[in-house]
Length: 298
Image (cartoon, rainbow, N blue to C red; front, top):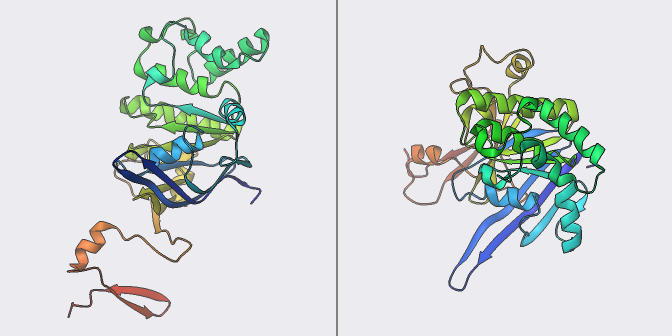
């Protein structure tokens, strides 16, 4: 377990108002290893952003267990949570307005989170991060003087200012073109390899999700399936991705996930193909395989 940096066990999140109660997470289980770069996908309302906000210390779980870098997010005091958000996790938002202060230059934005460091340390790290995201020439520019892609790259540098153990990115390529999306992914890949930082990305970007080593799909507040990058595509990525159509190629093997109670979520298209008239199926064990059958089928 020492190789795990994120441990979510039977995680539940319930939002309550005067007239309604919404269960956003319904017993989510997920482990992430140190130094892993993975993606989380799911339809709107599936619970993926809720989970990311919990990892970032922006929202409190209702039940279950959640550890990040050995820290128990259930038992943290408000003071401990502030330290956690400052030093353990970095957050990149889709909306650049949440990442950058418009009246400051890119250089000043990056130095802002490092207020506890000396001026020399702040300048040296800001210069290093600007070089890492390829924007040293734009250090004096303000937000309105940069493109959306440049703003997002500065946002990544800001998130890394205090050397976090985990980088969380919420739709980081959601508002940029394909070329910029590819460039941002290359930055993530470089950060992951050179700094060993763990990266968790929530995304709808098909090409981006197909490039990472592992993708966890959330449906109805639980992990429903995982996709693992095939070895031959991992090998191609280590050299060049120009020969791969990341939108069309089947780069990953998909696996359904059993929860601790032995339950499994079946994809809707498979259930539709069975043409069930109610919620009953027949299970048949055959040569190490389990077959689901429509009991009404001939």
